Amino acid sequence: MKAVVSRRYGSAALGDVDVPVPGKGEVLLEVRAAGVDMGTWHVLSGRPYLMRVMGFGFRAPKTPVLGRDVAGVVSAVGAGVTEFAVGDEVFGTCLGAFAEYAVAPVSQLAAKPAGLSFTEAAAVPISGGTALQGLRGVQPGQRVLVLGAGGGVGSYGVQIAKAAGAHVTGVCSTSKVSLVRSLGADEVVDYTVADFTGTYDLVLDCGGHRSLSRLRRAVTPRGAVVLVGSETSGPLLGGFDRALRAMALNPFVPQKFSLLLSTERGEVFDELRVMIEAGTVKPAVDRTFPLSEALDAISYVYTRRSIGKVVVTI
Ligand SMILES: NC(=O)c1ccc[n+]([C@@H]2O[C@H](COP(=O)([O-])OP(=O)(O)OC[C@H]3O[C@@H](n4cnc5c(N)ncnc54)[C@H](OP(=O)(O)O)[C@@H]3O)[C@@H](O)[C@H]2O)c1
Image 1 (spheres, rainbow, N blue to C red):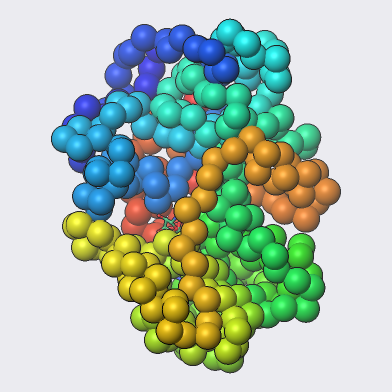
Image 2 (image 1 turned 60 degrees about the horizontal axis):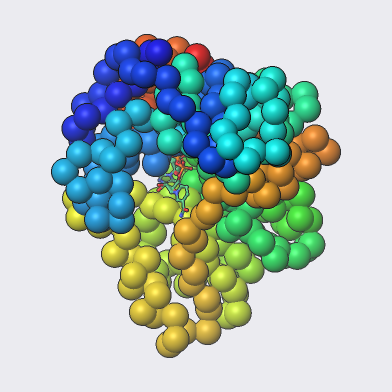
């Protein structure tokens, strides 16, 4: 089968590999679409180096085929699988989604939302799941600030916070203002023109790498800052040092910093499916790229040109 293969960090190409075989608790998917996010770039580049020691492979990628977000059709089931059958349309995460076929654990899959194309469904799992987990506990009437609102996680963050009844302010650059407004944000701040003002009950920080003191000033005395991610070019930690400093600061300040490490679970994707089918959340797909141009798709996201989500179609 055709797949985008990376045998050493920093390079990848379309090549031929064997179709994988599903093991116990796994299914083989005929991949129709695969989502792209900043994580895809991290796996391709091997940067920051922190992720190599976190288990992605020290000298070379542990999993050569790129891509994690997936939407497709079950074409074979492994031993013990009762949740899905051949022909089912599913979405979720796996290792090696930039390929014609991929093996996925059933624990990381859910039924594809009715009314969504495979392309839209592949744009949901990691970004939507991360936003959902970062916004747990938001109450109606609370003020939520989403930094990086025009990106993958942020575009879901705006919609999920609105669905919870919050007053939502989205912060993004000029080209993303109209998307963020269309997603339902009550206020949109173009940070290239002016910085955001005021205080919020919760800040979902998906980009911009603002200082911890700036983030503290953005929340109420009992407010919370959820650190989702924020890129710097630092080769070792890539901005993660700020999260470590936030954890060290926590006991000494009234506001609460939390570091989000989202999990990829079928139950989370099922929650998203329900929200999508109810019409409260919709993937914002900016562009699609064919499998042969998957590296261009990653570069498009990495250089921050993407508005919402980007998907590779197979
Ligand atoms: N913790 C976890 O479990 C988890 C899970 C998924 C992703 N992540 C991380 O979360 C981050 C976001 O991921 P993503 O996939 O959403 O990336 P993305 O699609 O690139 O979105 C990030 C957004 O931040 C915006 N941004 C940059 N500087 C900004 C600033 N000063 N103020 C406001 N917005 C700014 C970027 O565009 P503009 O500058 O044009 O507005 C971009 O739209 C990444 O660091 C990723 O690695 C973490």
